[in-house]
Image 1: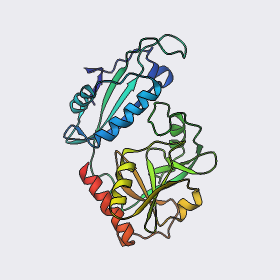
Image 2 (image 1 turned 90 degrees about the vertical axis):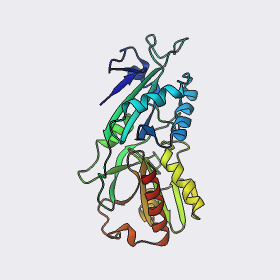
Image 3 (image 1 turned 30 degrees about the horizontal axis):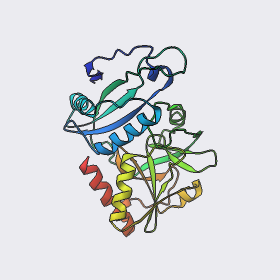
Length: 273
């Protein structure tokens, strides 16, 4: 695994770095193909949105791309790009002069790790709290960590709810629901992350003729949907079923025309990445 800190190879981070002390920063998890980050413009836009909202100066885009190409572990791999506010004085007050820290971590090579037709999802008891930076990938992820600790042995993902029992997301990605000819995305206006794959799939589904919209979705509605999909940078788009649900079709390819269309969109996304 290759780690770059401000473009220099190594894993030494100043203990005074505010990303380490306070989670004062943002990150992106990227899928690399030949060292090139897929859907880069979407990742970069979200990274900059988070930096702007936190008042952290933007790091050079070219430097980020160069670092990502250097840490690629294989023709197809993952990487993480982290930007913090850098070193600061004691306390929460931000320094008058900010020198961001740029960290790029090369991930494992990716392969066809999911041979099963479905991923299995359960429901976590940990609720999401109020998020002052909705849609952004900031470094404060304690809720996700606690929810991840709840996974059962047969879970591939855990669904997180808000305090009103609305579906927010998975611990590691977004959910999309298929209801007839309509693709429903649980809203991330107050909670959750606006995933790059989520946005791509919604746009692609709309072009393919499906009705697409965001909504507040209760758990019962999510369970009653014709199909559930998971998306993130690692898995792309994959169909899912609820743990303990034995009534679902054995093979997603045996589903409706809308299901077939979503599987085609997923294949297109996964092949592209």
